[in-house]
Structures are given as structure tokens and as C-alpha cells.
Length: 109
Length: 114
Image (cartoon, rainbow over all chains, first blue to last red; front, side):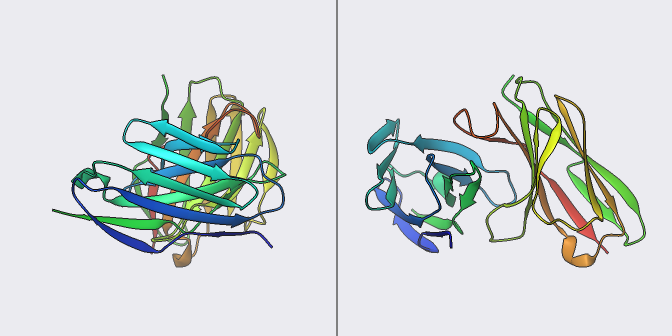
């Protein structure tokens, strides 16, 4: 079966750094996506990895290891507005997105 | 224009009503998607349109009927829904199915079935 695991909830402090992990087992791999979703709103695209390594985009970075079926999203200099759910999604061999359940990130002052 | 728009934003309907959700994008994307999302759950794929043709129907009940009038528009017709169909309905688009980088999501329609 297809499976994507990420922690249900994490708490971090404003100004700090947090790493959200995602492990996956899917039928094929055609890229991994991270989306941010605030409560009641649509998901917004954060990052895309298809090759191993680190992709950096401002305060957010995403890492991929295809051999380990593992990715993480790194958020630096946390701000209160970063409180949201972070969804990991893998595009499988049928080019469909398989979604993780999401990690709710709580930022405390 | 990098936006997907959806109307209405909120919809309350009875189980005997017929209503439609609308989605529009002007990014030239040829793949469009309908998702259903329940609270604290990830989006659940319902339908995929590729070049205005239905390419994927994830065993969705027939009370949900999609329509793609042209490459920019996607509708979801609703009829005889059940209270458990209450959810956030998200439309998304991408360059093509499988190609391009990401799916762009609209703001969603919050549907309540009484």
C-alpha cells in the first residue's frame, strides 16, 4: 500500500528553527511536495523536490533522500504566522498526489 | 494571473437541493482537479480532468457530477447530498497531469448539507 507518515503536531518558539519530517512508501516516485495550509484555507505550495538534496527558498528549505524515502521541511526564524498545518505529498507512478495527514505546527511567543 | 478562483465561498443546502460549485483558472493549465477535505484531514482526490476530458474518477458517488465546459472552467454539480458530504471542496489546476511542478489550489467552497 501507499503510506506517508509525518508527525501529527509540533510546537516551536517564535524566532527558532523547526524541522518537520516526512517518510513515504509509494508505488513509484515522481516528486515530493510540501504545502502550507492555514485553518479553513486552501493549501499553498511551499517546495518541490525530485532529486536528492536540499532546496532552499528564503526561510524555508526542503530536503529529500529518495533511497531512504525521507524528506524534511526546515523552517527558520519562525514567525507567529507560520502557525499552520504542513502537508507532505508524493506524486506516484500514476502522477497522482498521495497526501500525508499533515503536521499541525504551533508557534509560541 | 496565478490564481484559481472558486464560487461560492460558502454554501448551505438541503438534501433535496441541486447546486453547483464553480472553479476558474486563466493560467493556461490543462489539468484541473476536484478535492474534498474534511477537518484535520488531507485533501481527498475526487476527479481529474485532462484537456477537458475526465481522466480520473476516484469512485465518487453519482450525486457528485463534474463538468468541464472549457479549458478554464470546472464545475461540480451537486444533487441529493448527505450530511456527511459537508466539507471543504477544493479546486486545483496544474500545467498538465503529471507534468509541471505543483498544483495551484483555489480558496475552496465550504459546503454544509443540512
